[in-house]
Length: 567
Image (cartoon, helix red, strand yellow):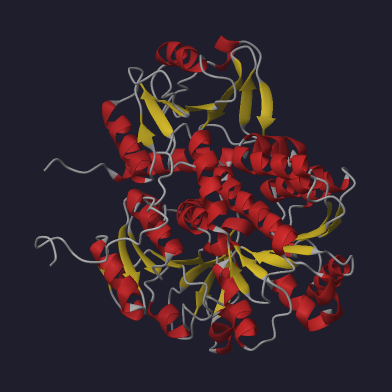
């Protein structure tokens, strides 16, 4: 068997792909790519990483419709320029991102294509080639510019599914006179959702928690005339006041993330529930308490379970959260103040706590990056799934003893217990993929005498009494891809927000008929979302096949004929 890639090459490839994702907020999985030039060994490592993350390599000899979405340039500008010009000849609206991933020298001559223009921080448009061709250099950090308007435009162009559903709602006039409260992470993609709802005729009011608010994006929405109750500097008491102020606008429909505003309405503004058509919730952790309320007969409105839609859970939870959380963790590790690189940067050993859809995605990305992955899971069926997927399976306290990286993916409080933190290897990195407050038992660790010391941006070392080293906890155990990055990739949230728009349609058309319970999404919303998304990704599905029709006057034969005609 040939030797595997050296650690330096693997770290280079990881850093290049993470830079692309951080700069563009775009997806790797399901995208078509080509690699141009460079050392064949470098190209092989990059190819393995991209395909491991779910991308598909295409060549210039593929069918005309099979254009690359990403062109990874590793060699010289002389090699890259004709390949870029060839790929730029594409249907209008088909985006090409050219990544200058030259390992030692630039692989793309930006001046070869005429004037360039900023499309968003770190991304350059090439209007002389096409309105759909953009350049990214992995050797240059994006300028420190909030550029909220540019980021909104960039997100909107990459959200064709949500745009299509929003246009249907606008043309149908269904939202006119409806007030919709959006209580989600306030970043460019959520801003686009809010604007699509407004353009479809709704009166939209927005709330976001302080640690989930991009102030520049909030201000960009305010300049459009939208009411936004959010500030990144708000105290806990101020956040509650902002949330109540949003609820006091008396929204007919509430779109929530974590069900915090839905629950707050039940606790503090129950008089509003009678006038509401309902709500939609897009997270696993948010649906759990709502189902308890429903079981107790205390849920006062129908809540559409957006999280349970197949086009949400199978993609957002797995591919979106997997990519964005792991990449955000490694980006923070890369910035740690240390004389030597942390082992996690070259693909060491990792533990994933939980093997639901999020855990599957986290494990998939870690394995693609070269990590040896161990899964810990209390559900024996899911643990068996992890075993069949090729991962080691072990109890948490045993698994963390030699792990370089530990990621919780359960959405359950106290998953990473004090016992587990004490058992971690020295300087193990511990983080949460999505999740809830205290998924890492930080309060319990402090109560047990742990001290915390800042070691880098959003990184602290927790040291227990008698310990020499301690563990590195990222972002106070927060939702790492939101508070330390720009959330899930745009194309992923395009799917989730298309389902949110479908839930809005359900509530407007059938809200009076729905039970005060957690209500499944209409399967037609899933199917319609997937078909538009397939087209946006450049693919086509087989036409739907209905059940074979039976003559109206005759029931189907229930007898078996496998053993001859029945007597």
